[in-house]
Length: 206
Image (cartoon, rainbow, N blue to C red):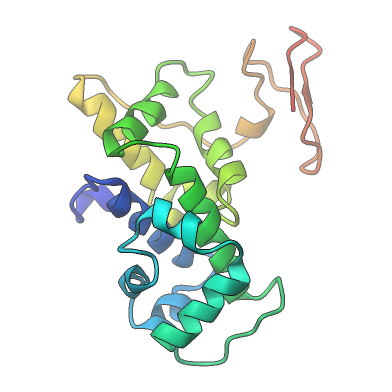
């Protein structure tokens, strides 16, 4: 089930940004740690300029300053560990990278249009969640696609294509990072290999 089935669709960049942060804390970062400590992710709006990405990028130059502000102003319950791989530092990095990503768009409609571009070509369709994984720290491929992250970016696609009377076709994420965008061939490679070099059509992507 997608989030759009029971929660109103975001109409602003601020709403989309809040939705993304909700999704991020709802996955491997454990909702009980972030949302539970704050009494709800919506409280972050108090230190994020009501979830304004431009405010966030202008106010916080790194995750340490952001976490200091969260501790001081929101006083989350429980122990806040500050080692780089701990949950709070990682989540603060997600907040900042998500703000930088969202800031690229003038409004929600522009973001929906950008997302819908990937639905126009079946070869490009699997690359939307991969791009999100690169742009937003800690989001992960599963979080960007299916129920772990409440399918936020498939919601973006669905909203746009339904407005045009088209149909969204979801794909199995298996092997999507190994499918060549040029010819559709399966080019197997280890997870740590980022370079795509297709021996069939010659397409090279990094």
